[in-house]
Amino acid sequence: MKILCAVKRVVDYNVKIRVKTDQSGVETSNVKFSMNPFDEIAVEEAVRLKEAGAATEIVVVSVGPTQAQETLRTALAMGADRAILVQTDVTTEPLAVAKLLKALVEKEAPGLVILGKQAIDDDCNQTGQMLAALLGWGQGTFASKVVAADGKVAVTREIDGGLETVELKLPAVVTADLRLNEPRYASLPNIMKAKKKPLETVAPDALGVDVTPRLKTLKVTEPAKRQAGIKVPDVATLVDKLKSEARVI
Image (cartoon, rainbow, N blue to C red; front, side, top):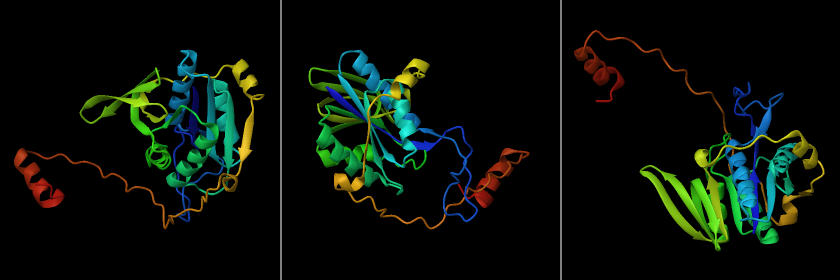
């Protein structure tokens, strides 16, 4: 079985996000980028499935600028076999990414697609669901455990009420949640080997997909600073403030 993993290049989760002075977006100059943490978990799960004998090849895909090659090389160093970069400088939206992935799925014919449940930059949590809908495949979202065998995949999902296990016929789409696994660190020998692994570059037009944004960002602002709390002398005062000031009761 071939596994296709989608990864995204995002601002590193340790970086303090700053809004541009003109409020047109987030400051990205001289900022460290890395692989989206949820996508990193997805790659790790694909590698584990391959090590368990459930998969034979792992193909990683990223949509973004030339610099996204670094993110793909990281995935290759973790254990993926080859990579595809859909190169574009346009800020892509979830539907455009899902359409690009659909075109690549039709080309590569994987048995399983694994990607992070959401990206930490836009927090959309839409691409996996949109891809499954476009393909007409079953989907297992928010996965905390994945077991593939006999042409099926059992996905344990994290839901509000606890855990839910669904069994999907392959091919299927799975989105990785935080507790699915702990990604490995790429060793130096694997980092060197990753430089020699094949990395193909294609344009969105070659896949027949228009990635022109459908949304327009009007303004980006920082959230309002949290006000300091106050102490009240008794319960009566607390209730009075909740009624008159906070207006929550």
